[in-house]
Image 1 (tube, one colour):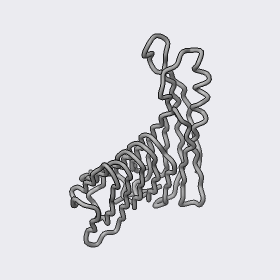
Image 2 (tube, helix red, strand yellow):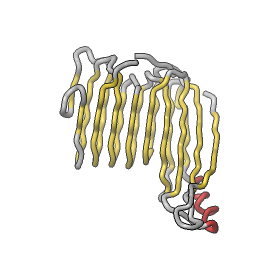
Image 3 (tube, rainbow, N blue to C red):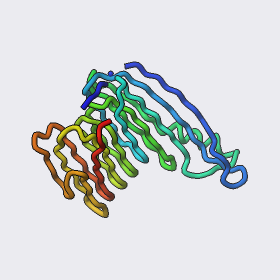
Length: 212
């Protein structure tokens, strides 16, 4: 198990147009990156995310948040300025309630797809509240709590520590705890890390990944 985590804010914005689908119709995309110093072992809360959320542990003492916003439809040139403004109304904000807490929140607007790539110090504690879409967490060694309404939750856990796992889906999904047990709850002897997962419509998969 390893980790670190710490506040300086840096943002890059890029507006791009996807290749035409038919004639001059294009999809509009905006990408933004924020980097925030963060203290070791702190808690990171992701609130109201929706779409594809990928959280990955790394060795740097900072959180990096890259967000790609795109329109779900393709537009003619005369419509693009208006629809680009729609993307700007989808805001991803960060807040520091304390030195050991970071909240990442999304204000969503209809008709916009959002993809998140978030890198965090490995021993961060995560608290994720997701709407519709996929949640993927990999190489994070701290406690993880994740809830989602519809989609899939996939955890890739390092095989370096015992876990207490409580995972449930309500409708139309399967819960796969590998290589631990098939079922809803499992606690390894001497478990020092807590995993709590809830999905309303969808599936949950947990896999062990050998340490590098």
